[in-house]
Image (cartoon, rainbow, N blue to C red; front, top):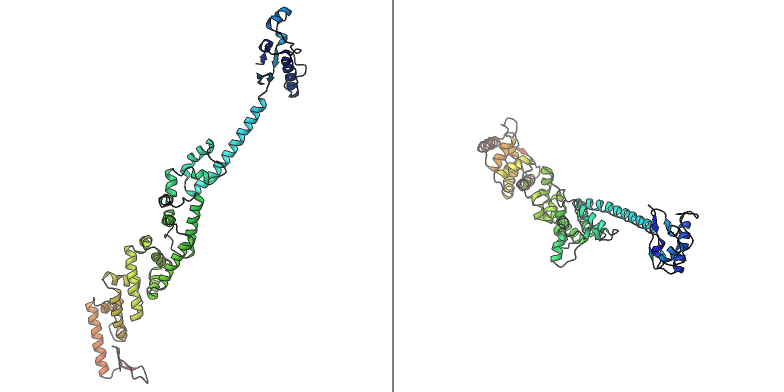
Length: 385
């Protein structure tokens, strides 16, 4: 329905104002294409007067009504009438622009939350964005605004300890940047998979304000300690179990953190077995298999005892090498005789020794000269001058 303003509604205005309103408003509506120039119902400018004046003149008032088109709002105040259609259009455009900016900001934040493992906080972020409480262009400001959320506190847990220690709280980008640097240092130095792989693994470094340079120095110190370790044992760890120097360096870098990797019951047994195997190769020229070395560990053999036993065996190496006509000893029997836990094997070895000594004394074939100038005689039961 059209908006109709009666002449009586503005009869109280001075004639010159009324004339101006009607003339200027008509021209403005024509200029905007809202009415035709010959729009019916618009009369000549009102020249003033009151309702009583109209009655005296015999006017019905119909010709004094200003008829405006539908959806054109007007306001009469202080002698002027203003249309709001243009303002409404501007408001709609501004609202559409705000919605686009909010949607773009939310899309960016969705990606950021997924990157930080905080997708559960999408609802909180959307509320901040639509509420207009934070600069939509500042990702860190949006994240910092939700720092009291439990999920946020858990993800950036080191910040709480930093606050208590009167250290600056790190923004998410800095926090995650440190994690990436720590991770790259450890991986580039060959630290094993499973060692400092989780975000919680770096929490202590961030709480302690450990710089990447300091971590690099710690890693290098760990490797130096590995380099100074017994090379024979390191070799046996690689040969028997595939344990690299990186695994050992991880232990020296942080024994508590490495404990699940290197000090489980299996690894403890393996480390002891590697020590025994190293002594076996050094002293007795015997390369033990992993099961053989672990079997000795299970029997309570220590590295020190292994060194002594294999040294004794080294002096009698010829006795352990079977010769034609002799009963052969199995590998287990040889080890049992070496470490004294296989009585039957020890008896067989003693019989072999006695037989060879007897034949040697009789000038048999078990005696052979091994040094033309040294005078060393290999008896098959040891060496004699």
